[in-house]
Length: 327
Image (tube, rainbow, N blue to C red; front, side, top):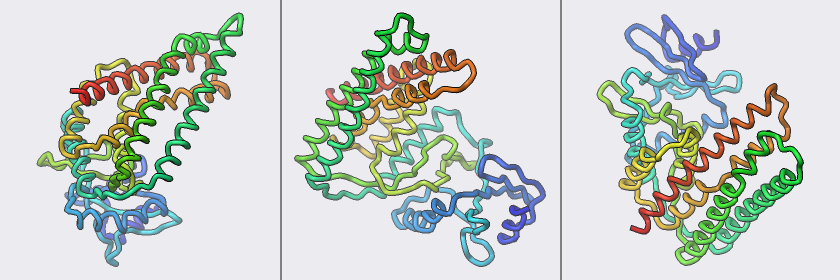
């Protein structure tokens, strides 16, 4: 078995293995390790990311163990493997406190790796034109859908739900475009942006705890330089994809983050614009049109209801952010 061959490179004799996704939980003597498999293209980033984090003074990540040849990665069949101590759910606090600690450390990661740079007028306008152009096309697609639905004598349950929600999604697009325009105008005045080292895949599963309760990031495989919202939005989007919620937890997490890494006006504008953009609805409409699954009508009618709940959850967060900005 390939895993046993790889562990020999670390001089580890496993007595038991558990495969959890792309991670092997390795039991050897009184020690427990995590052996992670990743793509070569992603794993190469780790050679520069870990030294960079050390240099910047950020240490809240699980370290890698060197193999007996001194290398930190083992290449086998176009896959890279690396070994870490196992820190798992045994030490994990309740979820809300878990997220608080994660957002605080995410803010520290961004703060310590932040760099300010100039963004010229051409790039600002290009980003605005490209993004707003795409969003306007999506709005036209929604318009074509509503026209088709309203021309029918009998609408399917999915189409009937879409008609009920259409204006709500339209308003979300209008807000996203309006906020993006304000971002462009504000950026043309300052022409400054901040880049940070992104974790790349922020998740409660990728923030683990030791037996003292200290939290550490794992899985930097998709880490890269980018804008802070690129770490925040995927996590928020996934969290808000649920039943209607008041959003207090999400706002608390964002406020913890912004306390330790205050967002500039342009950064907050761009985050609100992208958060409000309901592109998930376009993807749902496309999947509905190419549906082949059994009971597809029932399945997709439930999905569009869930998309509406997500929209309202996002709207709630946007309203709270707007109120904070005004106060």
